Image 1 (cartoon, helix red, strand yellow):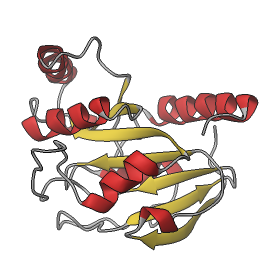
Image 2 (cartoon, one colour):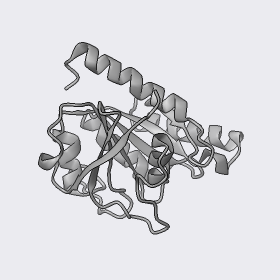
Image 3 (cartoon, one colour):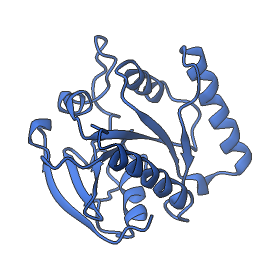
Image 4 (cartoon, helix red, strand yellow):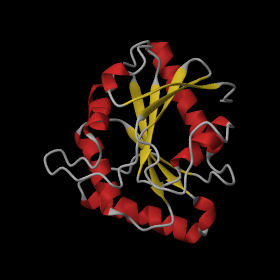
Length: 206
């Protein structure tokens, strides 16, 4: 898939006010400072589409971008600074919980994880929430240009081990990316394209 158009549509903090278009949505979320904005800009070939900042937590709202006029890329706030809720095991604002649990157009979420670090409890807990809530998601490991392949492999293996220890039957599909070097771009866009084709073919993706 080639992204020809990427248009900002709306920002808000109320899932019920998200666009009414019944187009497939792909939500991007991760810990603060995981490189989410840089990844979005790399995927869309627009270095100014998503706001980047050295200050973690820049994104505070649900941001919808319409891509190629037939699907939405949704930029969500990071979950690094929110209080952990024992009741839901969520680590981010309630309006994000509402988005994930009530947004019919959401077909897949991408959970971004900084590949430079070993398995972090906050990421494992967030993915557990996603699994328990039956929200489809894939993992995107970011900043792959910062470390060598051996460390990348060992860190992914550590995540697999920890997820299996948390009763996961298998590791979710994952992508290894680098915004600086456009690593993983084609694979990720190809995956979105395949899912879109299934959604439109079945006309029952929602």
